[in-house]
Image (cartoon, rainbow, N blue to C red; front, side):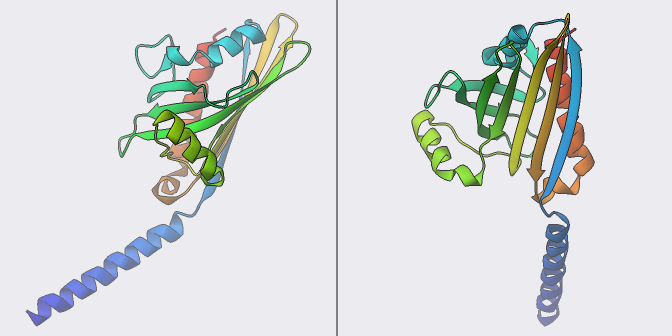
Length: 196
């Protein structure tokens, strides 16, 4: 009996040491990826594709976004140049849900830049207000995430540049190559949606 108790203490100590080791390896890290795409579509058409929220999901929708169950525009606090969306993403560990702020900056020539910023811990009051107004939850996978898309017309073609910057910590950060591969998969899907 005494020996078993001693063994359990050693096992508990070893488990705690292993977890501490993992947590020290799993510090927050920033992942950045930039991609470019050229299309014959106009900036206005590209904008209509990027914001076709009811038509974007992982399967069975007109436009593809990996693992996305649905994304919806939130009417609360919405204006012509800024609004919030709520996304529900399928994940093997647990489904992910989060609010994002979308802003659009149009130029006089029709070009534009849009930012999609996932709300994070610094937006706690805003998140609480959105949750209360919508009844939806906010449980993101990443600490921070921001996607900037710049669209510029050049002659008969339009250049689309996208930059994704996100911060991850915990278990996610143990596989940085997998995180970058996931960003690339989403970016490639966006460019396929825009098309030639």
